[in-house]
View 1 (cartoon, helix red, strand yellow):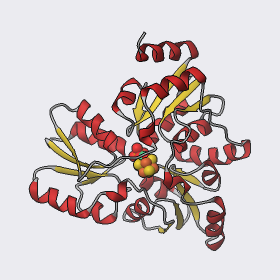
View 2: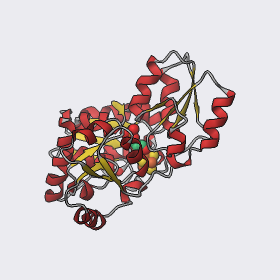
View 3: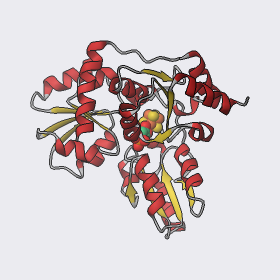
View 4: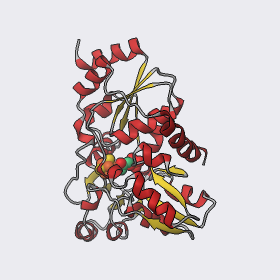
Length: 298
Ligand code: 13P
Ligand code: SF4
């Protein structure tokens, strides 16, 4: 029996489902039951009837799945697969910001720890950040922890955004010079970027999307050549799904270490041994759950 067949057999025996983020390596993307962005995957985690969720992604995503589906066993395929941005603010620091602006409400990007979500009014993802901020009944928003997403959202709201100074080391590596050169050399191509990119790169893009938004754009657009400012795993998916179009990284391909830790063998190992189980204290689960549920209602 080959590795894919073993995964398939175990999945059926154990009533498990495999969720993978768009940045996973191709072989993992291909064996996933659901492949998507943070928002898609959190919705699926909430709705699935499976007993076990195997998450091929980074820790905050598996934690989100657990918080939304507390009765399920949620497994992260690699114990140390993390997102450095999620650790750029501590609950203690966030409490200090809340004390400084008592009239503000906290909107936290899902790329945060469960403890930060528990201190937040509502969560958002890159797919719904503008809608979420505009839905909040407060004029002042403490936006945690991505400064670039905060800056992008601030263009589409009249609310005062107080950004926390976190960032994604992968997306901040996309450069203005590469965007300018691409425009010059390929005037007919489309440039699409993730809102975690720096403002100077966003300013040169045609469109700004979550990874799920990029998947939809790639299907619909008449453009034949598309330059993409996000982690290279998504580009593999775009190429696979749109054979008539060409996709390139906007400048050198950028990789997320945490996302690239999982191999197909890790998915099998995770299913076999039922590791690495996500555990979150009950009180944190409850408070973080309110912030996430509020987001899903919007
Ligand atoms: P998406 O929700 O757009 O997939 O983004 C997740 C992420 O970690 C971006 O770096
Ligand atoms: Fe975190 Fe950036 Fe990796 Fe996304 S790409 S998981 S924000 S480090």
